[in-house]
Length: 408
Image (tube, rainbow, N blue to C red; front, side):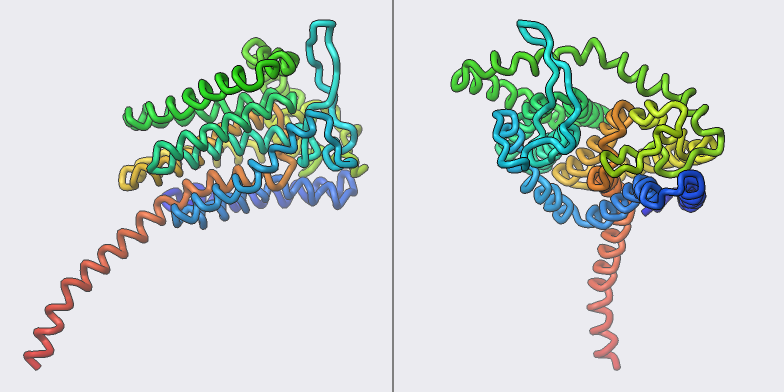
C-alpha cells in the first residue's frame, strides 16, 4: 500500500505502537473500557478505510461501481431531510437523537433557535456530512464518465444534495463541497488540462443555473421560505477564518496543557453522546474536542503528534509521486482517482473545524477509502506493465517454440 515510501513503512508501525500505549493510558486513567475502544476505533478506522480503498483502487471499474453504490443509497436517503424540514416525523424516526443541538437563525422578527433537519440520519451534523459527501461523490461519478450528459445529470444530483445541507443548518457542509470543487479545479490547472477544467466549471455552473431557474419557475416562494437558512449560509465568508482561528489554532496551546506532554489517552475527548461515559469533566479544556487538532494533541500527546506529522509529510510526498502515474491513465479513470483524492483533502479543514462527526466509524472509513484508492496507482501500473511484458514475451516465444519442435 505504501509502495515507493520506505519511510512510511517504518513510521506506521511506530504510530500503531503509540496508539496501543495511549489505549493502555486511557484505560488506566479513566477506567472506561468502552471509552478506550471508541478512542482506538477513531485511529484504526481510517487505516481500515485506506486498506479497503487500496483494494478497490486496483480496479477502476470496481472503484467507480463502489462510488455508484454509495450514491444509490445516500441520494434517495437525502429526501428524508426535506421531509424532516417539512415537519414529517414518522413517529420518532425523523427526529434528532437526544433532541439535537439548537442552531441560531435570523428572521424578520428577530432570531430563533431550532434544530436543523436530520432525516433518517437522526443527527443534523451527520446528515450534513453525508449530504456533502454525496454531492462531492456525485460530481466525481459524473466527471469520471466519458459522457458529458452523464456529468450534467449527476451535477444536478450534487446540487440537490448541496441545497439540502442548508436545511441541516450546518454551514461546514457547504464549505466542504466548495473546497472540494476548488481543489479539483486546482488539480486540473496544475495538470494543464484545459478541457477538463472547463468541463468541471460547466458541470458545476450549468446545474446551478438550471436549478435556480427551475426553483424560480416552479417554486417561486421557496427562496422566501428558506430565508433563515440562506441568511445563515451567507454568514460563511465573514465567519470562516474566525471559526478556523478560534477552533483550530487557538486550541493548540490549551490542548498541550491538556495532554500533560504524554497525552491523556485514546478516547479522552471522544464525543459519546448519551452513553454516559464522557470524561470531559476530568479534562482541563474539554472544549478543544471540537477541534481536530486539539483532539489529537490532547489524546496522543506531543510525541504522538510529532510522529503523526512525519507520517503526513511522507504521505504527501507519496501522493505527489503517485499523481505522476496518472499520465498513463485514460481521462475517465484519472478523474475518478483525482476526484476521490480531492474529496479526502477537502475533509481536512472540515476536520479542523468540527471533529465531532469523525467520531462516526463509517465517515472515517469513507474518507480513508477515498484516499486509499490513490495509493493503489503504483501497484496497478506495475501489475499491468508486468502483464504486458509477459504477453509480449509469450507472443515472441510462440514462433520460436514451433521452430524448435520442427528441428527436433
